[in-house]
Amino acid sequence: MIQMELLNKMLNQAASVAIGGHVRPDGDCVGSCMGLFQYIRENYSDKCVDVYLEEIPEAFQLIEATKEIRHEIPKEQEAYDLFICLDCGDKDRLEFSAPLFDAAKHTLCVDHHISNTGFAEVSYVMPDASSTSELIYQLIEEEKISLAVAEALYLGIVHDTGVFQYSCTSPETMRIAAKLLEKGVNGPKIIQDTFYEKTYAQNQILGRALLESILFMNGTCIASYIKKNVLEFYGVTPKDLDGIVSQLRVTKGVEVAVFMYEIAPNTYKVSLRSKEKIDVSRIAQFFGGGGHMRAAGFTMHGSAYDVLNNLSEQIEVQMKKNEGQQE
Image 1 (cartoon, rainbow, N blue to C red):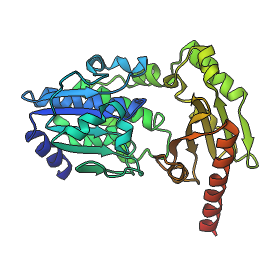
Image 2 (image 1 turned 60 degrees about the vertical axis):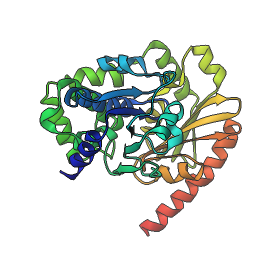
Image 3 (image 1 turned 90 degrees about the horizontal axis):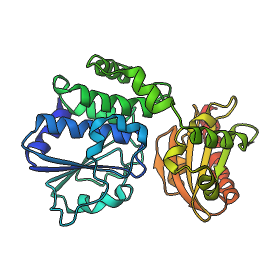
Image 4 (image 1 turned 135 degrees about the vertical axis):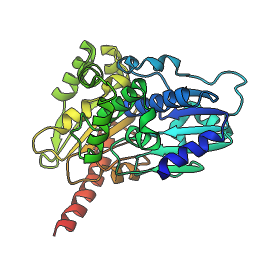
């Protein structure tokens, strides 16, 4: 296949490979990075391969190779022949590993974000794919996928599909998941331990976010926010907030869910989710962010009410566009 030839060609021309993903790595970022890392290490023994990611949630450490992740660039690190950027829509989201991307002789980006800027030398971007982990499966040789590789890719697919609930889940996604299970993956364990299981503090902050949520725009939207001092009170970090916006989204009658948390005084990280009608990637792009049609995000300065007021205007614009298309 053309996809396999693309990856094989670039790997065969490189003696050293670095793999990097976006800030605040989620399940798909970790799954795709670790799946490709292990695949290269197992099938290209003559290559030096390293993975660069920020600290990852403890639950994802069930993928054993995550203990080899580099969280900083070693002093006097030589330039890599190839830097492979995964699940990342623009270079800025690489953050600490961006200098390695800049210094690499060649670069490849594999991604499924519709907002991808095409910043790499070679880009394999498929917005209709469920996840970057699904794309990695398409780029590698199925018969060479070990159990370790399969577990990582299954983790990524599970998280970016919401355990196969989101609209991005296609028949091909299910076929790939089935083939990974045939490799011996313990699907129920990965789903339970990395997607559903929460710490006591995570459940507390989820409960607070739900309790203090508000409906607006005639009940078609729901929003909640957490200030920095509240995060500190509960002893949680941003990586403990995964899943809150998705839980808000399932509220009956809601089309768009908004969850915000303060990362600095009057600066909020905003996550958006929609059900069927609204393309939240367009809203996020308007504010300098990006993502997918049904899941996107951005960062904005101002009070929580300032952010919500500005956001409401753009949600209304998208709703009117949607109404116009239906007429």
